[in-house]
Length: 391
Ligand SMILES: *Cc1c(COP(=O)(O)O)cnc(C)c1O
Image (cartoon, rainbow, N blue to C red):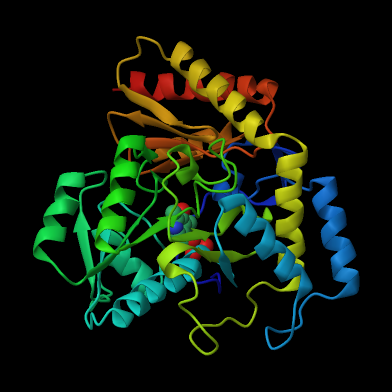
């Protein structure tokens, strides 16, 4: 019996090492990685520049404490603030922690305005994490079941539904923020159109609400801009980052601007590990490499090649509902549950995920080449075709 708690339905595969966009297992078989540890391995596996930066830092110092100054954290905060055009960064270790900080900021903002029971509007099919508050904000009843009482103060509306948000605004004067993913990841790769994003920004301005963008999955250059909200220019007051920020070293960040700037002072929030020198070096190297190697432009071109390739290969195939996404965040929606495809793909040496039951999700490293894209299409399209042909 395994002593690891049984919280995941794992495939019977374990990897020994990686090489760019490929992973090798214990038997010597290799796998094309189109999942990147769920949007984490931004630079693929064992990227030489990242390996060197981490090794050099490990030889100097791994961790000190937020009781002291951390110059690398200062540098990383400057860099993120510059890329986002935002002001302050709080560092933690994961996406849910970054969102916890965002939720606390929203409540703090409310209390400052004299709203004692602040409410946050959240979306159907949203995913914000597994801690109690972020689970409560997540729009998935199955994930919440059995953990009641949930954290109070969230109001749920359908994704991208401006009318529903306006209706809440009219009747509920305790709203202090709207929290959403501009591109939903776990929810099935659903993209909020730019008109909606701008209208939402305008409504938040009008009402004095914080706009909170969860960029944990769609951020970090994956969609062709540093952050997903930059496609529409609807800059949030709070933005959260994690997953791909340090290419595999755990880190999270909660970034503020506008009404959210300057809310927290000493004692309001904290983290033991958050923003330690090792994680900050990994994040700085990730950001520098994305910029120096043109990886955002690459994400746009390669993402387009994958979508086009899959569309051509699956043309006229019954059961393909939609092929969508932005850059290297891609969803292929089928007309039936297709979770079995993950295992079948792995058998053939391809790593993908299925989310929202019916959506094949691809999150390749930003270092994918168009040749890698072709390999991916040539492996995945026949698999989908065969699966759908079985009826
Ligand atoms: C993965 C994810 C989270 C949770 O991140 P953890 O690091 O697992 O806590 C939150 N929001 C979004 C959009 C995510 O994709």
